[in-house]
Length: 437
Image (tube, rainbow, N blue to C red):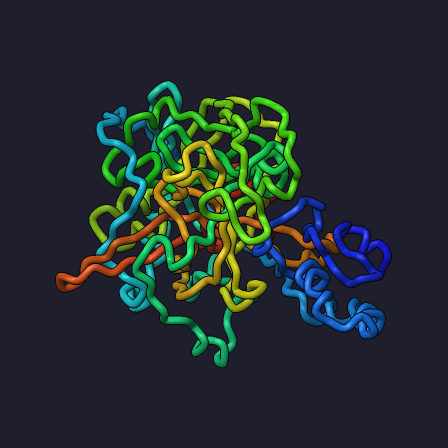
């Protein structure tokens, strides 16, 4: 128990007050940051009378063992590359789109027919754009995949849970009060998990998922018909500080217009981006073929391979569980929203509707945040620790035109077992290291 409390240095066992909440890595967080698992409980102990604290702490381990949501490791199928063929060089004509449009809303996706085995092989085939301008297309084969479901039984919903899905629809990119947090100062920007967020030279965001790999949205590099301007010489920016931050650590995390509850005004610290060129860009054919139908939204993801390794910690991939299995049904992501230039912006919110491939949520976001890795934090029973994993890619603010009326959603592409197998192969270069997700 002493070891557990030592990880939350702001907690006082005498007063029961946590003045500066910290997560399992020890970094200071704002008033509404990722408080799940032990941190949520410890940071709320001050609500209890002090006479009950000892009784509460005695019961703490037992409570955690039954209530903490866990990552469920599962056997995933194999997406194995077959033959590759050269394709005509791209033309790089259009600008990158920072928003995505589709004629298919959540109900449309839910009622769409399940893809056949042949369809899936076509959608998961992929193009690779090389930094020298060459373009190749690679066919894939699927092995160990159950065609009846695109979800793992380990993450399937019980019948009683299926009726609990939210059907709430919001119509703004900012839902009421702006709940985004600007992350300022090298003490935070360079601290995990914020340090995994990167910026693309096309204007989008991305997430470090390997020593030299970045996960982003496909529309950041390809408009559905061709590769966008800047895709051939694509660069990835790592935010860094120019000078030492001399301010109090807690003032580095700000809400909305550089202020928030119990947070003083921020004096801007000069930041800069260090850029690394992309060597290869992988885009699934489901996104490219999807331009003429409603399936493309399901495949709005791409993986970049950098020319050299970065020196930051990356975030692991995970198969996306149903939102009911997430702590508080919350998802999190950080990106570079256009309305806050030069700033890293963090947000979290409850997940809403979901299909087998898409997750609709109400996280406040602006163009520029698309491509960010959507992650969750749950207990890793094998390693006996809390761990964050990327479970989706933020696609952006989606406009849907139906019968002359406009509907708007914030949507993320879920990492299904098949997508996990594909992305993992792109990172590892083999399927042996990608059998569990």
